[in-house]
Image 1 (cartoon, rainbow, N blue to C red):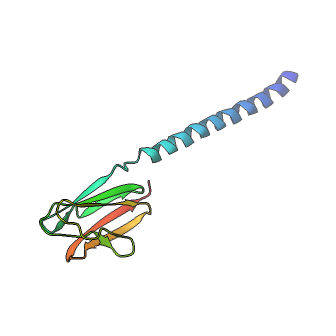
Image 2 (cartoon, rainbow, N blue to C red; image 1 turned 60 degrees about the vertical axis):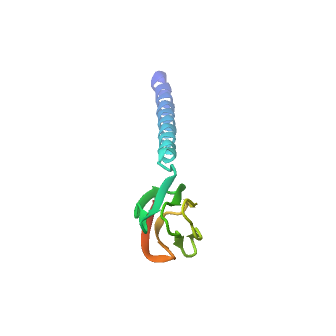
Image 3 (cartoon, helix red, strand yellow; image 1 turned 180 degrees about the vertical axis):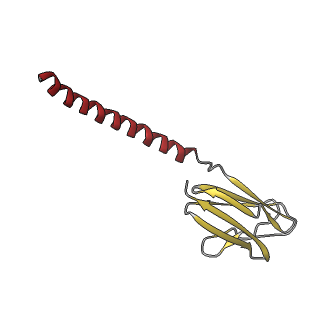
Length: 122
């Protein structure tokens, strides 16, 4: 009878220990998934009066670089969010997207030039 009384608390301690360890392992794995999300810098090329790519899906924390490879000046602008100013040939502009959402931007010099960045949580 005494043996049974000792086995129950020991079994309970072992179960709790296993649950704690498995919870820690799961949390560590979740953290690794967040860190391993692709937040490497992305490049949007401005050429032939177009943004390339015109649609870009990224994770929060990603830097997007716009590079003007066109012979004409351009901008990458979303009023109130970011504005590259005028980019002449060979110039670039960078912006870090820290908030999830859909960002539709234009070239203010050529408003028919439109593109979109979709930012998803990391």
